[in-house]
Length: 269
Image (cartoon, rainbow, N blue to C red):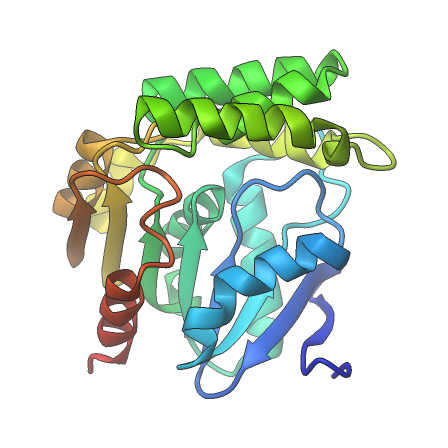
């Protein structure tokens, strides 16, 4: 535990984590990141900020994907890493929240390793990317491979907004922040994760998943969309949907209503 009350380390076969809050454990699988190393500085400040509302109710474990992902890694491989790590640290099934790309891994985890997941929450995530989201991530990967980090950052940030003005503002912000995306050693883990999510589609397996699941999304989410959120929740055997009609990809995740609904859902017997 460091001086700011954040415990950090590695789980399983080297998965970086940090832990905040107190109470029953809650596993948080983050969205797409530029690297899979332990977050530091502003990066950890941002990630911890996302966890703060949940950490008032639970001991939240932010767990990153494996460093050095091999080319061809699938979402099932990523879920297997998480399953090994969670079995090694916890004595029974735990609650899991997956955000965006982390939601893809979390849903795969519930499908392949149901014994480790008690309840599941998908924040701005579904059984597959929407067509626009898939195109955007493939474009992002191409820009990163070309070393065009300003354009890549603008592309990624623009997808977070719900309306035209928000999209424009976020794209400009992304352009300005582009140089900060650069990481030592390149974007290998990010690119492998994008490829894994491009191939990810659990539509045909949803009815076999028995984990109670809350799907939270915005109808104006440009990575997914209302259709993907509704289909995911309706096909799941014990699925529930919280859909915001006017919000985009990021605007649903930390609102007071979302946190209250998530905590209520996780605390149900």
